[in-house]
Structure formats: structure tokens, C-alpha cells
Length: 278
Image (tube, rainbow, N blue to C red):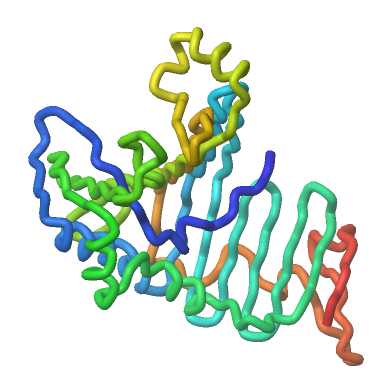
């Protein structure tokens, strides 16, 4: 299973509006963006131990959907971080980074030149800042839905649409607890165009399952055909724990520094191969 990157922490959202019956709708975009910023600020409280299920689906409309799934665990405090997903563990402190591949029994040790620590990761979880709210409101539409049971939903979509459609180029929907701004579920969807030749377009057009997913347009005196490609990533937030004060695995559980400054593998990882880039 392929590893899914931590794009969750770098999203600068373009979110969609979904029609859901029986829900209270507030069309105040600025309020929605402020709430969205508050969700990012939820992770400023260190340390924390987070567990997330991630699912990424790519549908080109012409082949079977390609789906990747991953369970992610992330721990951060002021000076350390720990990430685990699909047999890969990565951890770091103020000076060192370590990657452990349990599938190949390999350990990679290298300097932490970017100073990636818990503070570094937490600072990048701020989805949007207060100063960018007015600017974002000019480019995106947003609204808040009250789902009931202490749960709200924010939906934002870009004002830029896919060529000759009413489909936004990117959408995100996030469910969260309004009292604490704790996220519970989020989906990010991006739409792009795949060029088609005329014969492929005609063939797909005859298939009812492609209704609304094909585009026939005239650009620069030339007729062009496209299929809509959809990439969707869903994050389900399983648990967050603010009472944990150390990572589930520490550097001295893996490595020991000798008197000559060299590192050797220790503990249950002694049969792993160590590579260093120090």
C-alpha cells in the first residue's frame, strides 16, 4: 500500500457547497473562513497524539477508480515529532531525523537541516490566517451548515469553474465540533480536464454513466473534447489525545551513540540496516 503524504496540514482550502435537506444554512463567508482558521488553531496546543484514516481516490472517468488507503499516527511536542503510516516511521528532534522502514528493515539517519520539530509541524496546521480571510473571500465561496448534535460543516468552493461547466476546480468539506473547533471529517476534491480525441468522445458519450462528465467545446476555432478527472482525499479523524507527553517511540529506543560519535542500532531494531547521511 502506498504512503499518502500529509497534505492535510498544508491545505489552503477551496471548499464546496453541498445540498443537504433539513440543515440550517448560514451564507456568511467571512464567518466560515474564521471558523476554518479556528480548526487549524486547534492543533496549536502541544503536545498531541493524533490518529487519522486517509483515503485517496482518483477517477479518470475512463478507467476503474484507483484508491489508496492509509492509517496515520502523528505525535508532536515542542522539540520532537513522530509519524507512522504503512510500515514507515519517521521521527525527529532539534538535530536529527530518523526514518524506519519496517517492511525492508532499514533505518535512515540524517541531519535535521530544516529544523522539523513539533513546533514546525504545528505552525503549518494553521489552514488560513486572519490577514488572508478577506482575500480568500474574494476568490472562494463559503458557508456553514449546522448538522445538529454539536456538529457543524464548513463548505467552501473556488469561484473558478471547470471549462464550460458549473463545477468548481476544487472543493473541501469539513465537519467539526463548533465549541472546540475539533475536526471530525474532511474531504478535499480537485477536478481537472483530460483531453479526448473525437472517436473516444463519441464512444463515451453513448454510455449513460458518463453523463455530465464529458465536455465538448469550441476554443480558438477548434473543437475540443475532454473528460473530467476527479481526485478526492478523505480524512477521518479517529482520535486526538492532548495528555500524552512523549512519542510512542524515541530515538534512544532505536540508536545509540558511541564514544567516537558514530551511531549503532540498538534494542529490537538490531537486525535492521543503518544508513547515515550525517
